[in-house]
Length: 144
Image (cartoon, rainbow, N blue to C red; front, side, top):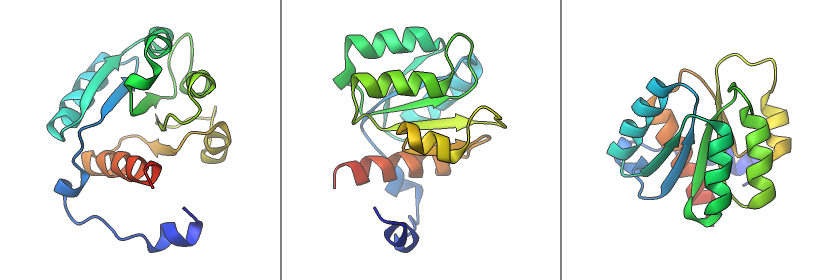
């Protein structure tokens, strides 16, 4: 989608427009965040598999790379950060849509994330509406 198309894309009016059914791999080292995000996304219709260890998430993805429709990952995690996890996931499956969520991060910016192949870069804290609209937008654009 071109910059102009993005600027002229219609705004979604309701949370109902952001409902989904796809399978999400959710990766964040904070258990409270993964639990809360999983509940939020499941209430929006998504099937969510969460992982609090990025290395385990990579192994899980390697085992079944086509089982997931999209990956949502935190940036700052021990062992392997979200940018490196994203690079590995994209090496395995170049078409997997990835959303990178971060608070303040001096390790990565929007341009670097884009260069890696990450489809969306969201700053925390993120609202339910922003997250579900971003997921829906990425998945809908992927199928065009």
